[in-house]
Image (cartoon, rainbow, N blue to C red):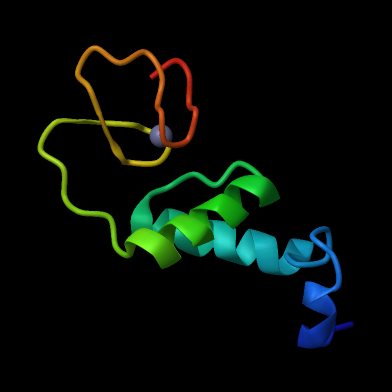
Length: 85
Ligand SMILES: [Zn+2]
């Protein structure tokens, strides 16, 4: 059974139904190579994209979880919190 779009915004737990969450998780992994851990991470990821747009290409080290640039000696990612990297 499909859920009407207006029901997605009634609460934070309904904003990303599981079917939609897994679809978004899969597409983000394919397109951006970013591993979305959970619904909270997806919400922050979508806000990040609205504010900053497409991620620029990096020349230094990158986080294996979010592909964002990190210092070469970093032990954790300040963007997604992946630890250790
Ligand atoms: Zn990261």
